[in-house]
Image 1 (tube, rainbow, N blue to C red):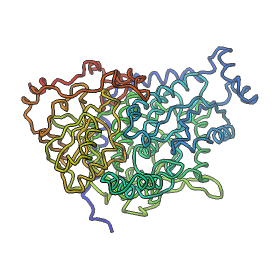
Image 2: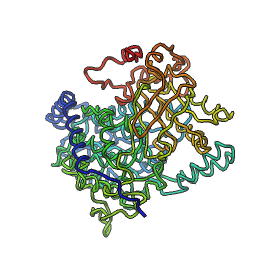
Image 3: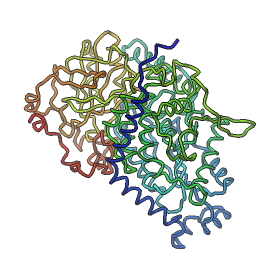
Image 4: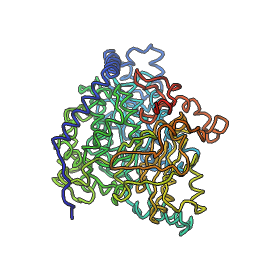
Length: 636
C-alpha cells in the first residue's frame, strides 16, 4: 500500500531546474567556451593518425592484422580505442575479461577497427575499507584519468569505448576522455551481480559482530553470501550510482546499466555499444564528440537523477570534477537548490530494503527517466551517444528472436515500495542535503536516515583517527548521546578515505537509543546510511578549518531538516582557541605505496571543488597553498 501523496509543485520544480541550469551556463561561460574552442579545433583537424609521420604510423599498426594494417594506412575506417579497467579480483570488473574480443568483432562488423589502447587501475573500496590502501582510493580517480589520457595520447584513434563500473573508475575514465573531448566516447558497463543475501541482513550481522554477538566465521559467511559472484555489488553505492549517471547523461546505450553479467541481453548491449561508437565517429556519419555530450544540461540531468534516487554522496565530488573537466562550473549550492525541488522516487539499499536488481525489475532506468522527463525535471534536448534527445532513454532493451530492440518503459512501477512516480514520491525533496554552519559545509545522505534521527544535538567527542573511535566503542566509552567529530580525514590530510567501517559501531549505539551523529572531513561509502553523518566537511582540518578548534564536550547540532550544522560556541571564542591535532606528516604517511602519492596530496583541491589535483579552481580562487581557513576573519 502506498502512503498518501506528498505535496509536490511540478511547475516550481521545473522552473528551479531551468534557473539552476541557466546560472551554471552563465557562471561557466569563460571556461566552457575555452574548452569547446579546444575541442572544436582538434575536431577540425580530422583523424590525428592521418597526420602522423610514416615511422609513427608504422609503429601504431605494426602488430595489427594484415587487413587492419591496410585500413589504418588509408584512414578509411574509424579506429576505436579500448580503454579497460579489467582485473579479476574486482567482481564488478571480472566480466570485462572477454569484452575486447567481443567488441573487436562487433566493431569490424560495423565497419571499423579496434585496438586495445590501454588499461587503467581499478581498486576495490570493499577490500581496502579500513586499511591504509583506502587512503589512495580518491586519488586513484585522477590517476585513472591520467592513465586514460596516456592510452589516448597516441593519436591513433577516432573514438573510445571505456570499460569500467566502480567507484573512482568511471569518473576517472570520463575525466580522461574529456581531455580528448573531440573524440566520441561510450561507457560500457558489465551489470550488477545477481541478488544474494540481502543487504539489510548483511548489515544486521555486521552490527552483531560489532557487539561481539557473532564470531568472525559467521560474519565472513554473511559477507560471502552477499558478495557471491561476478558483477557490481547490489547496494546503491557509488558503483551503481555511476551507472545511473552515465545513462542519464547519455553516455551509455539506453537501458545498459543494470542487466546482469553473463546474460544474452548483456552481450547484445556490449555488441551494440561497439557498433554505435563506430557510427558516431567523424568517419561514421553521426559525429558525437564527448565534449559536446557532457554539457551544462547533461550535468544537471546527472544531479537530478542522483537526487531522485538517493545516490552516492561521493558524486557531490565526482560530478563537480567531471563537470570541471568539461569546462562546466558546478558547485554545492546548485546541488542544494536542486535537492530542494527534486522528489525522491526510489528506495534502494541503504535508502530502503531493495537492491538494484529489484529497482531494475520494478521499471528501472527507463521508468525513472520517463517520470522525470514528464515532470520537466530533466532536460530532454540533449546530445547522447544514442542520438539527439533524452526521450529515447525512456525505453528499455529486450531481445526479440535474438535481435536487440528497445520498447517503451512499463506504464507504471511494478513495485511501488522500490520505485514511484513523481505524483506519489517517497519524499518531496531529494536524497542528498548540503548542510552548513560554523563548522563549514558538508553533505548528508538524508534518504537513508529515519525521520526520528534527522536532528541530533549532543556533546562532541573528537577523534583525529577513526581507530580511536572504534577503540572507545570497544572499551564501552561511547554509551551516551554524542556527535563524533572525526577530523584530519580530508583530501589534503590523508587522501580522504571512506570511513564506512565506523557505521556498524555507530549503528549499534543508535540502536541502544542514543542520539548519535558523525561530523567529518572524510568520506563515507555510498552504502553508508542509517546514522546521520555530515561528511566532506570543508574547509577540512588539514588546511585549518574550524574542525581544528572543536573540543570534547562542545555541543553540536546536525539538523538535516533545516540543513544546519551548528557549533554552539561563540565565533569569538572559537576564533581564539588554539588549533589541536594534526594531519600525518610525510614521514608518517608511508607504506602501502602512500609515499608515492605525496605530490597528489600536496596538490589536491577541496571537496566542494571536486577534490581533484588538476587545478580546476575558478579563475578568482586563490592558489591551493593560500586556501588555509582563517577563523579570525570569520569572527571579524
